[in-house]
Image 1 (cartoon, rainbow, N blue to C red):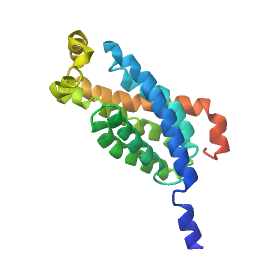
Image 2: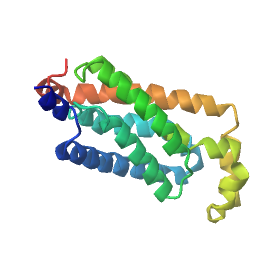
Image 3: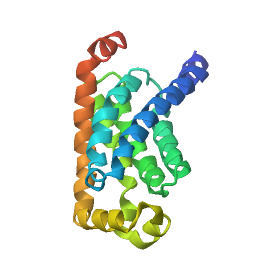
Image 4: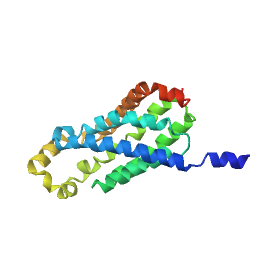
Amino acid sequence: MSTKKDSSNKLQGKDLMNVGIYSAIYFVIVFAVAMLGYIPIMMPMLCVLVPLIAGVPFMLFLTKVKKFGMIWIMSIIMGILMLLTGMAQYALIIGAFSGLIAELIYKSGNYKSQSKAVLTCGVFSIWVWGNFIPLFFKRESYWAARQSFGEDYINTLNSLMPIWLCPILLAAAFVFGILGGLLGKTLLKKHFKKAGIA
């Protein structure tokens, strides 16, 4: 009896497939929104737009999450994808921690709490902020690999992102992740009911 229970708590192929599918959907949205970053003023806004817009598919993903590890794996996948698209390792590092905390939050509600789901969305979204760390603390090396953006773009963006904006963007990623979660909860009410999430 205990063996059956233990095996049911382990990630199965279907669970990993859901992680893969929703990670792909989430990444497509992130990539599309990130294109706005070619406009300097929109770059810091990515900590607002990505958590807000991607919060909807992430909340749909949470209706599929019933086992420990799925959220954490997704956050690590996002960090790896950032590395593969030329970003630094910080999104992976931050995501590994925020993803684990998000996982524990959702698990604390037995994967059935809408309020915990919304909070999970906020904490998970913090990984986005990790992409901005080099812009604040390692500007020279960051821009050395991105000279193709042009001097005007680089100077404009540097002026738009003073060091004091760093904690503000962290807070923005969390707050708008919460708002994205609330938006997702509203739009996906039927899916939550079907999944038994109250």
